Image 1 (cartoon, rainbow, N blue to C red):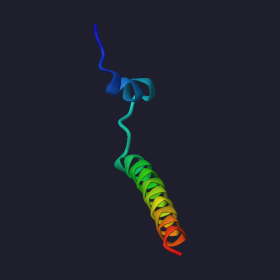
Image 2 (cartoon, rainbow, N blue to C red):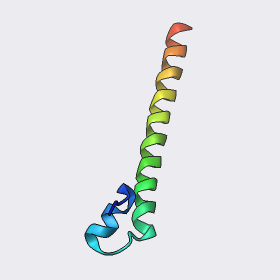
Image 3 (tube, rainbow, N blue to C red):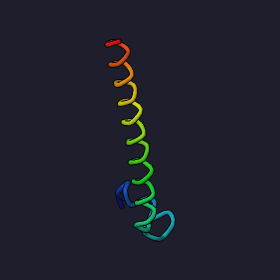
Length: 53
Protein backbone atom coordinates (compact mmCIF):
# COMPACT_ATOMS: atom_id res chain seq x y z
CA UNK A 1 0.00 0.00 0.00
CA UNK A 2 1.35 3.44 -0.92
CA UNK A 3 0.51 6.67 0.87
CA UNK A 4 0.68 10.24 -0.27
CA UNK A 5 2.93 12.50 1.81
CA UNK A 6 0.21 15.15 2.16
CA UNK A 7 -1.95 12.58 3.96
CA UNK A 8 0.68 11.55 6.51
CA UNK A 9 -0.35 14.07 9.21
CA UNK A 10 -3.96 12.89 8.92
CA UNK A 11 -2.92 9.25 9.07
CA UNK A 12 -0.66 9.83 12.07
CA UNK A 13 -3.32 11.62 14.14
CA UNK A 14 -6.38 9.93 12.72
CA UNK A 15 -8.07 13.27 12.00
CA UNK A 16 -8.06 15.89 9.31
CA UNK A 17 -6.31 19.19 10.06
CA UNK A 18 -8.82 21.93 10.74
CA UNK A 19 -8.96 24.96 8.41
CA UNK A 20 -8.03 27.32 11.26
CA UNK A 21 -4.62 25.66 11.54
CA UNK A 22 -3.95 26.37 7.88
CA UNK A 23 -5.17 29.95 8.21
CA UNK A 24 -2.80 30.64 11.11
CA UNK A 25 0.14 29.37 9.07
CA UNK A 26 -0.84 31.48 6.04
CA UNK A 27 -1.37 34.54 8.24
CA UNK A 28 2.06 34.14 9.84
CA UNK A 29 3.75 33.66 6.47
CA UNK A 30 1.92 36.68 5.02
CA UNK A 31 2.91 38.83 7.98
CA UNK A 32 6.56 37.82 7.65
CA UNK A 33 6.48 38.56 3.92
CA UNK A 34 4.96 41.99 4.48
CA UNK A 35 7.53 42.84 7.14
CA UNK A 36 10.32 41.82 4.76
CA UNK A 37 8.87 43.98 1.97
CA UNK A 38 8.51 46.92 4.36
CA UNK A 39 12.14 46.57 5.49
CA UNK A 40 13.40 46.32 1.90
CA UNK A 41 11.37 49.40 0.93
CA UNK A 42 12.74 51.34 3.88
CA UNK A 43 16.29 50.37 2.94
CA UNK A 44 15.76 51.42 -0.69
CA UNK A 45 14.31 54.79 0.33
CA UNK A 46 17.18 55.39 2.75
CA UNK A 47 19.74 54.58 0.03
CA UNK A 48 17.95 56.86 -2.44
CA UNK A 49 18.03 59.83 -0.06
CA UNK A 50 21.61 59.09 0.98
CA UNK A 51 22.79 59.01 -2.65
CA UNK A 52 20.91 62.19 -3.56
CA UNK A 53 22.03 64.30 -0.62
